[in-house]
Image (cartoon, rainbow, N blue to C red; front, side):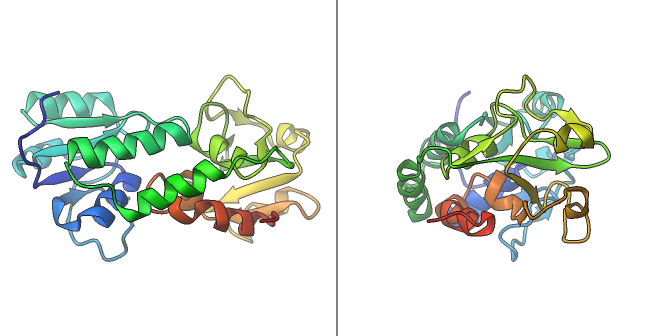
Length: 244
């Protein structure tokens, strides 16, 4: 793609990247999705959701760049924006390394900003975190039907870097659907229940898994690639009850 000479107006259709841009240069953002909840005081126009963005309104805003993600957004919306003459930057993230590389390129190449301190700290923290697996886990992201984190995912790689092996890491699907009986028979030491995309709570989810192996964690720490990466390793270890 041909990048604008200067980027002053950005629309982000990815919650993680919205937070990353806001933490780096908040004045850049002119619009974001309804799901962009961080930072909490983000005051920009909302252009619906990640799967149904108002592409006509986005084009009317005349952004210098729209930021999307291959997994979270739809190709048809990218095409509509490009047909309207709007430059679109597509990120592809499947593990921690591609997340860090993608953030570097987005901020320094696409937006032409210096590397922010939070990204430097994320590199330091994640590059140093690579212990051998000390426990295993299954990570549920939905129920009715039950869905879990599978292979080629950011969350699987992030867990591996804190010593947790995803029991579905070698599944052919990135987010396989499973019956509850299959989950119970998976033999995981821990059952990880994040608060997004499905909002698992102490009263919704843990009752399905006997014993004392359920861990409720922040979905943002587990699946978002942005400023949360600077503290994800330490905080996830605490939430999972792992040694430092």
